[in-house]
Image (tube, rainbow, N blue to C red; front, side, top):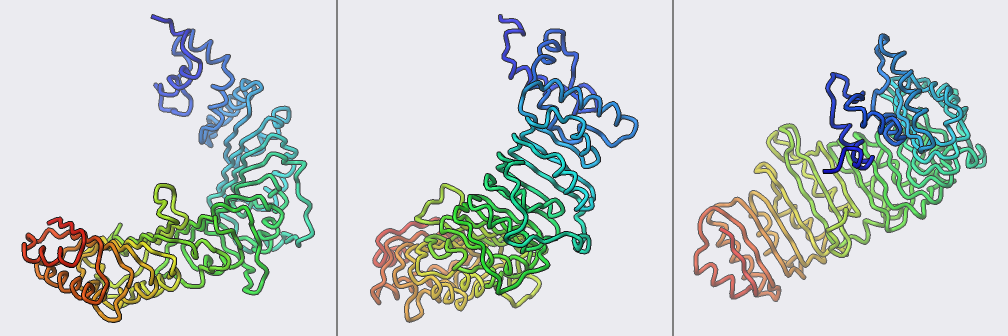
Length: 474
């Protein structure tokens, strides 16, 4: 057998990380055996891994000085390795102690409890230049209120020269608005994330206008105090993904200010009772105009309110992430608390399109339902449907809408229904499809799933007379 010294260094590091004999899981066992200790002490990559452990330097006053000594030792032992650092905000100034190592700093993540924006911005900019920095993440538990920003100068479109020479390799920038410096959004940045806090929209648009190569933009619960409906759009010609995470209204006011190409994936997460038509502008988000398949699902993750999930695809490409994803965790629907609102009107007005040929609707709770008027509205919004998949507690409203004249959708070829209705629904299903066939609208394929009793042979025979392929699951 080979001795332990024959194991690859990378394997030793992973084994070492799995051993923790003390209550301090961030400081791993350093005396496994002499061979391991000697090997690891001479492995710069091992020490580099320590420096991205959360809370490596504790806030406990009894251990803080010891932890800082360890931190400096780890930095020294990384040798010439790319330097990845993760710090608490109270230790941010430790970076001033290692000026000779800053040129190899490639990743920096600092997290504060609370800050004053101008002070942190000045300390951050004082560290420059950082020629190797590629990934910068600055976050805060308690963002500063809007009033703390009144002393900040909002740069105009021609002000604030970009700090390209200070951060020539910066690719990913994730910041709280407290730390957002427009001139740091240099041309090399391809991903920008801003989360939780107050920000000037003018300041953001100024930065975005200088970053035409941006491919990813995420805005999460960022409040803008200077939104103006008539202001000019910022064009992002290479944007591949736009992520918006909000618990309130700013999404509908924000989207019209950003113009993206048709390839841009839209990912929206909400916590709001409604979808607002104004939040989706087809001129700024052309992805909505070219979707060919929609999946709509509503379910109860809790007893309070249903969650809505909408996925949109192009050309049936359902393997990859959907180009359109909307998730609303607290959506209103006509359900157990006797609310009279249903979201069908807002959904169809936002997403209705003659390009959509496939639609899947899943209402995964017995208290969720749709009337024939709801279904008629859906069919009018998606007139080119050829495939419809429905999972619902009761399909009576659907069947009524399918047989009422004028028949909609006229080009329907494939229909899948999974429902919880009683045995009587089978006869209604037969009558509906016979009516459509008699008017020249025969289905090519029907799949019907219902566990409440067997399907009668004469019902099945009548279906087979008007549908080319029939699949019954009972």
